[in-house]
Image (cartoon, rainbow, N blue to C red; front, side):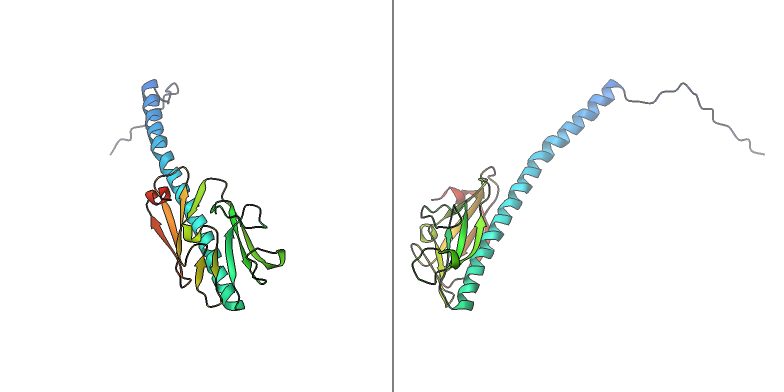
Length: 188
């Protein structure tokens, strides 16, 4: 017959961490946090650039669609106040989409189709000279800009050197977005 051994629990036995074990655990935790925070910041910056790119892309595409649908010129221009176009080429504060019914190149209240707010200063939008002040879609869908027929918008995060996007508006009115390197944002 087999004999069963009984386990005896000692009531005075203590469980816990020694100072050395605690220091090792804190060191490992600090290394993990130190490596995770920059990665998380990069992901946040990349997502903010993606969101801004999508917003500008959709606005330009919407303007082209409205121009085709209404058979009228539709203009997209940078705006800081939500009621007038600015002519300094800064798209970071937002933009307006308006149907220029009276052909005065100025958004009247009844002509405004959509207003888009800016990005709290952390997203920069640099536009080529050809589209710095506006992009206008013709009733045929073709695009013209303030200085030519096509141009690029470069979207960059102020605190990140890792990621940027470019939106191109071709003379035919086609809007295209693509990834680029941060050096594109330093170009004028």
